[in-house]
Amino acid sequence: MYPPPDLSYSPRVSERSDNPSSARVPPNGVARLFLATLIGVVILAYAWWTDPAHGAGYFPCTFHKLTGLYCPGCGGQRALHALLHGRIMEALRLNAPAVLIFVPLGLTAYAAYARQCLGHPSRRPPQRTARWVALFLILALLYGVARNLPGAFFDVLRP
Image (cartoon, rainbow, N blue to C red; front, side):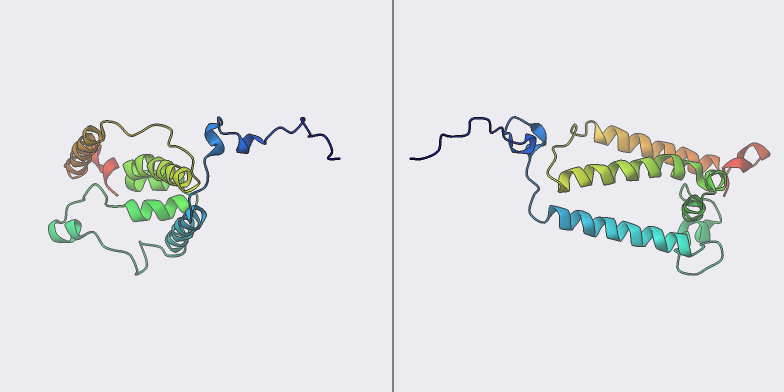
C-alpha cells in the first residue's frame, strides 16, 4: 500500500501565488544588476583615485572654457571626489545642488533598477515627469545665473 499523503505541507512564502514578492527573477536579471553595479563601482573608484583639480582624465567644462562663466555643473566632479573622500563640507561648497540632488537621485535610480532586475514590481509609476524635468531645468538655469552674479553674497555659489 501507499503511505497516506502528508497534509501538513505548506508551501514556502516565495512559492505562494498570492504573495506579491513571489515574482520570478527575469532571465539575466542578476547578471544585468551585477554588470550595472560593477560599472558603477569602477566609475566611483576612478573618481576616488583621480583628483579632478590636479590630474588629467576629467572633462573640463566647455561652457566655462568658452565663456569664463560657471555653469550649474561646474565643480560637480570635484564635489564627487571630495564626497568620496568624506569631505562633505568641501563637496557642498563646490556644488551643493549636485551633492544634494544627484546623490539621492542616483541611489533611488539604482534601487529602482535593482528591483526591476530582481523581478520585483515597481513601487509606483513615475507621474508628472515632464513637470519635474521642467522645474529642474528652470532651477538649474537660475542657479547657473546666480552663481555668476557679482557680489560677495553670490561668492558662496561659486566653486
